[in-house]
Image (tube, rainbow, N blue to C red):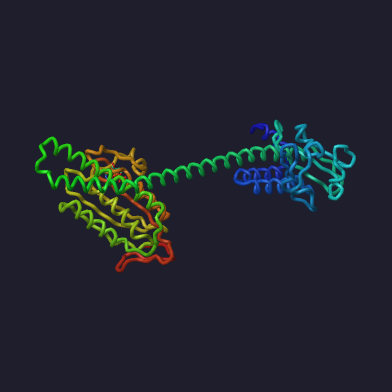
Length: 429
Ligand code: ADP
């Protein structure tokens, strides 16, 4: 049934009934499982007409399945009857509503099934008239002459139910697809991990052997041999880095780590020390503000700072001294950290892309890397129930932000911190 047909039907109904119907439609649109849906429909069907009972029936091949009911006394919940020998079945097979003032006068009624119940009168309407998949029944304990309005109300509910059932099916299919994709993703990650893990040893042998060869006879190489040899060493080292990053990515997601109270300033300082030592860079201006103690894993937090700081070094501008600032601010229930540089910057069109695996904006010969560092940061922050994002302008610099909830039990500040925690929320003192 299309929207305008539903509207025409609603025009004939009393306003309180329309209100009830609208609220049922709203609830039905949010129903995500069959049980919720059948309960909603049974209760609403009874309320809408003021009947003494209502039942929700589904077609189960050549039988009617009484899935749920809301009634003053037991009806047939959980039972199945052949389509051809019950009135819901007749309604489905004939794609028509049924109204009976005295059920025992109608030959289509299986009297034996009705005698133990309170039912004297009924209305049954099919769900999805074009090709019924179920029915909704209304039942009265005293003889009652069903009205057109009641039939229209129930039919409007049945039409809405039909849409809700389709949505439910689509939702279930979608859920299944998401699950399949997650399973496949997991398998791929396992595969990448196993392959990378097994590559580590042979790669180490290659690099060591190359070093030994160079030591033994490097001096005898002519310029071409040296060039080829350097290619081999660079390639092997790059592969080693890639393997290391793939393993780190999997570990960022899976490795069992202890979350504990961590002084984030110490971790940031340590990362900078390591990177400065590797980089040999003296010509830098680095400042770290007071940083909070947060609930984290030292290992994972060090990876986040390590990746962000090493990117700031790697992507610095050739025209100016590197300026690097690290800080954190309280924002509601989160700490927002930032790592700011005055490097080459990133085009705003790529701000989302760079957090995906293997996404790099520069060729390998300009800047080395695997394109996994930020993807690793993102996974680590997801484990903290936090986020990572950036602000950046090409040619000016970048600020990477990441959030870590401050509400973790026992969260506390470093000494001399100018912010304090109130009720688990960070506030400025
Ligand atoms: P990698 O550094 O190994 O290339 P990342 O995932 O860490 O991989 O970063 C992805 C890309 O984002 C980088 O290749 C670079 O293009 C860009 N990027 C990251 N950090 C910065 C930065 N501080 N300044 C400029 N560009 C950056």
